[in-house]
Image 1: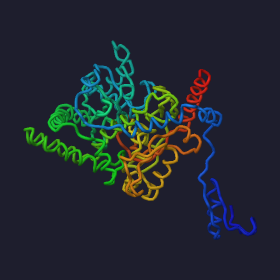
Image 2 (image 1 turned 90 degrees about the vertical axis):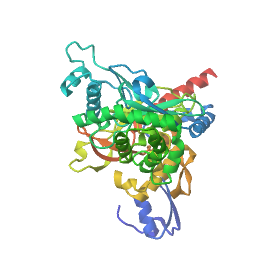
Image 3 (image 1 turned 45 degrees about the vertical axis):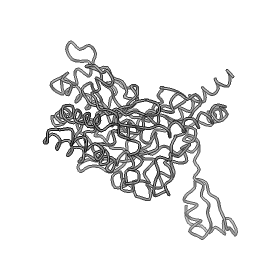
Image 4 (image 1 turned 180 degrees about the horizontal axis):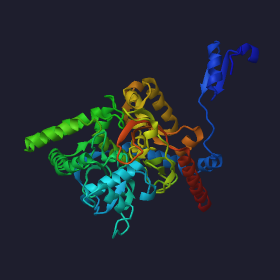
Length: 480
């Protein structure tokens, strides 16, 4: 649109209200007209009838209030570190993965790479080729390949590909108020690691060191020190420049501070102790794998509340993005995952990136990560953006959240609580999608990490969930 005189078009104008027409608003403001901007978007898809049915659901207001109360009240303490075979009863050939259910036939490159690495780590196969044959069910004498299930189906979470096998060690996190527990694997670091789909010799060697040295030593330290308050560390790290998803530097060092006396006093072999301390302190993402199960406990506290439109799970498997809601139980609403946009490691570009992957969006589901970007201006350098945009992003997320968490506050917003309790109806009505910070895995199995960036869920996940919630609302009204 070319610049025009406001007086020529509108007559003598002193005040204009605009809705969703930024270019026109900018033109008027440049001519000295006072403009009130309304950030309006049409509802997503064909959601208007479903929005109307959910809006009149007599259960909704109290159900959502209860969901947010439970999410905010949930605590999180690190209580133990144990192998998955002990925590979950996993047996040889049973693997868990990130995101909604998927099989080998539809698995992305990084998911396949992580499954290959897990088969090598467990000794199921001796070569990547043999592992792939077993995983695909093509191996001679094969009984059909692995038993795959989502981490969320067993109450836990896995970063990126999220593959968990029996011999991998897990953090166990407990809500002291309810006694509910969740779990996550130990963080391997960045680069060529299993969760990004790499499975080279160095990856398997590291996993075996983590199972043989890191896990057992962390277990002894936690049992010696007693429960570590993970929720309290998350609250502090938001005041120290972390947002809990792609930046966890302060959280990692605070965890190490909590456990270091127990590590030193435990009589550990000095060289092994030095290796563990060096590994944890040098891995800024180590604490992410405690933020995730803490957020799973918070979001999971809202699960199963009939009539609630609060999102309890957002997860990706590298092929599909899926969500669950408090009012629809364990049902997944899925659509093709989008590819993040951001910054790439040297030698990689957009053509190398796989679509979005990982359970780590549970951080945004519980109100940190992308919802707390205003607390971590330095995150802009990692995911591609500006400090001002990080503040604006958090502000926008309040529009789709039902509450604010007083335990997680943002200094840059005068210590306002982070937006908590994503409401399906607000997402569909406003057209604002949840903002997620994430790493990017290479599209080809075995590549590893290629960058980090920003992504949002597919809109279809929310319109599908809204349709199911509307159907539930209609049935509840008919039966009342």
